[in-house]
Length: 91
Image 1: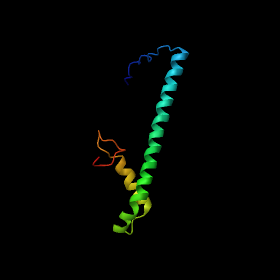
Image 2: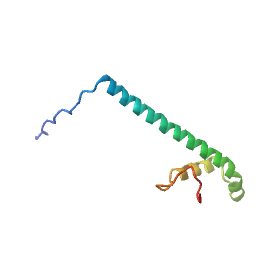
Image 3: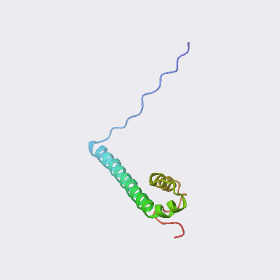
Image 4: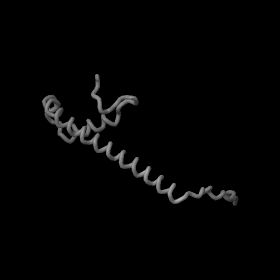
């Protein structure tokens, strides 16, 4: 039976406490910013669903609000690259 050759230990570079703390703060800030953007998008989707549901319901009487909101959320995640999600089509 053959065994794999031993793997070298990963290279760990020493970091000063200050550098590590700055790195953690930057990661935490990026995470908070990302979450804030997600929440804003969820709110925009919900408000859009509220305003557009009556017209769509008139065309599709069996459509639930939940399904309509789901369709809007799905569409917002399929925005083509390079297009700003906050701007409606045609602007």
